[in-house]
Image (tube, rainbow, N blue to C red):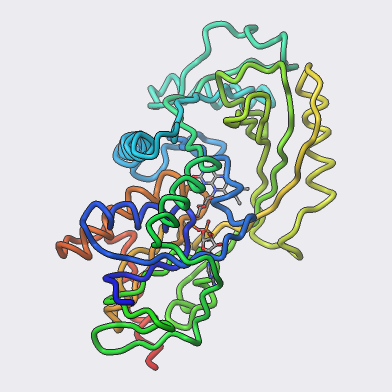
Length: 355
Ligand SMILES: Cc1cc2nc3c(=O)[nH]c(=O)nc-3n(C[C@H](O)[C@H](O)[C@H](O)COP(=O)(O)OP(=O)(O)OC[C@H]3O[C@@H](n4cnc5c(N)ncnc54)[C@H](O)[C@@H]3O)c2cc1C
């Protein structure tokens, strides 16, 4: 079988890469091992314009957010699913200091943060003593619906192989690559943390970051917002089901779930929520994050038939569509990739690995 591209991974990065390659009429095969705990499968899908305790604007928010909103809506329409919803965040201040900090941002005319007019509006459902603010616009990408729907489309068109990719079976030739019975002009890795052990890319400064979450049933909570108090409580597409998380661990003994997280989250819910809830699931995953918190996009400086779309960290839902499109325009038309994301910024260290 001969194709233009072999794509490894059908998380959010591989999904968007294959989507834009299809738009260009390129042929491709995707290999994915269907790991149910991959970050893309367990992500909350939040596309948030601000980050951290200071509510600082996220990198390139003015470009990336509108792009994501349009891209997910278009893909959802093609697949006949709801791929994205607008869900602003109601931020319950955990302390008077946090309230002061938030209101200072509002007064500085910080874009995206607003005072909430009716401070007691949520008292039927939540306990909170220090008021709340609103963050907008915020979206949730419905990856729990989108990823299986795109996968099914690829399976129907015989463009997806459900198996483990084995790097030792890859042969890199001067103008193509060979993997088992597949010949491709290029191979593009969208395989999350697996790339950190890939001999072509292991020198890159990956910094895996673990996160845990729980799925809870709260039948009576209105699903009109994402609610935040230390953690995010996010409505899922199934009515009554909510996602709560997450923590961010740069160092961890196990990639699996911990009793510590479960106890902490359960205690938070008991203290915060006035409604009954039932815990349905507890999951953990490791985000493909990077030391300087910027993605890894582009072709290997020495092996021009090997590429990478990775390092999406905590913001894959917003970054993946934008950078998948940039990568495809680079592959098809030679357009430049944003230098802060282009893996050529690591030309020196990547050039040390010569096979
Ligand atoms: C708890 C948690 C909450 C999160 N919440 C958010 C959020 O609200 N908003 C946001 O923007 N981001 C969030 N993230 C981060 C986001 O999930 C990631 O940035 C994003 O999913 C990365 O996508 P990816 O496709 O690059 O990698 P991955 O999701 O890791 O996908 C890689 C794919 O490659 C496959 N694969 C790997 N190795 C192989 C192999 N050898 N052979 C075959 N297949 C292979 C995997 O099965 C997987 O399908 C969260 C992450 C976690 C863990």
